[in-house]
Length: 102
Image 1 (tube, helix red, strand yellow):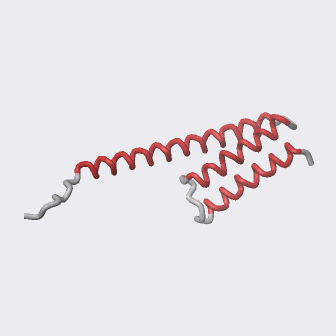
Image 2 (cartoon, helix red, strand yellow):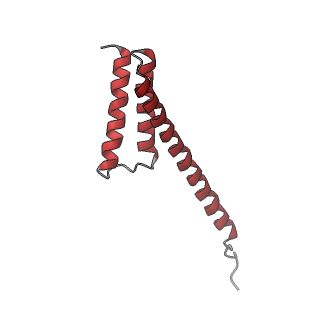
Image 3 (cartoon, rainbow, N blue to C red):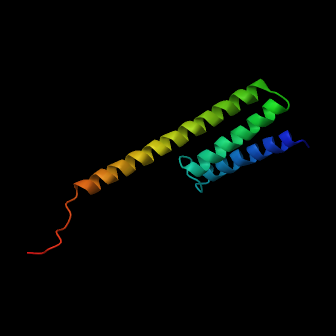
């Protein structure tokens, strides 16, 4: 078994873990753990396809799979950033208690 075979199998394993976790409710498919597993898995499979035995349909599928995972990660990061900005804005609007009581 070559190194590219090992990389491809590791990628498949990562994607199957993410799929099984999402299907059983143990892994949120919109959270970074599942998205990173899918992105890394697709990347490893792509590596094995591009460095070993090329297969056009599998290459297209893994490219799209990785792109979808990447878009999901970007969307998660944007939502997280917006939430943090909103919380910071809310905290700035909250009146602070005065140091002296009347």
